[in-house]
Image (cartoon, rainbow, N blue to C red; front, side, top):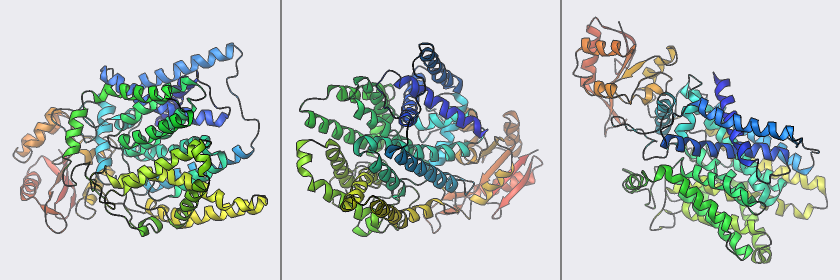
Length: 606
């Protein structure tokens, strides 16, 4: 049931986060402490899962729940017996409280946009979600995250499996892989906006942080509800940076920071390289402002890298080889690498129009204007920047310069790049902070007229929503999205599976990720299934029936479409069509759903 998986997520994340941050000097803000603990706990979960996997300890939800709740409960009980303050509620709701309410409103808006949009259709999007569905199913059943000899998981070995592990553990208490992927992907992006708010609050204060969180949620290029590991890896960046920032107050914050770095490295392979540059920029600015090496920040970064070797020590070489020869899009390190990288014009920034389902490029007109105003405000205060009075200004400028150049490796004809179109996700982070700076800079002449200034800022926020948010809403709430299954030729045949109970055992002649992604079950990674599928077109109907009966499969889906360099990209495989005829003519199978003259047919075994 959905309630179990949601409760499990928050119990694990908060329990681990509470234990991890109990020994550090926490924020005095009650809500900041609690919400950030979710981020630290999620990072700790990823690290713990990878370490348990390396030790071949089963990735069972009960182990994680015990490891999360029992220590947290013991610490809470100890504090209570010692008469220490266990819960410290906020005493007032002044400026920081209003900013928090804005951030919470942004969270709920984002959750609605991403979750409602994702559930508007009953299938998964393009290729990534189907791959994650079979990875999550594998983890949920086998309770491990190692690749197999017969089945090549898309996001496991050498790909770091943190995202699939999280989804797989949650799936152990739920029956729907579609719900787990759709809901928790939306939740992670939305929680990331809250974590961004608290990170930015330490940089620029609560009011600007609230505007920045709103702007980030509105920027079209900062995530759709597309299901992929990028949502988690970037969301984890914010609690990690929050911990790095607070090391100056308490050296013990280096522990959550190190775990944050490790978790980032254990979720996805290319974004961590970019995020590493952003972390290094922060450390460099801290060294410059303090005029000394920030040893604990450096130790946190190196410690995170060392922890991540639990996975990368045996997988880095294979992952690098894959990235160097990634296929039709060229090397991941080429300036035009990636499926949607191209040169960008000014219009792309000002007037978003390309409705890509993963990273639609662009900021919107008002955000772009505020960005320019924010940059002007920073440079007008360059003396403070040079004196190191506002080190966050230098950090954000470095982030902006790095991500802007990375986004435009094709535009600027650079000799190399790193999936430029994916840089849009990271570029949105400094843009949102600078846009907030620009909004308050433009309103500064009205400082003496409080209500008038507030109205002016609200008008700017409306402009952001109108020129950015509406476009983003339109993409996310579209009633149907492109998927790896052809909408006319294949998808309707697979939709017939929706009439069957969850986890009905169904096997097909092609990749069973489409079966699993439809909430049915096929042990795609089992050796006997791999071998059976190799000979499916040559086995007699009696042999097919015998295998299915012995292994508990009730249905067989035959898909005759195969990729080809023709208009429409698909042609019918005559061998599959002939096999369909043999199955129909036998006494062992009953066709229960037939699409496009048998191009996709679902058979029930007698």
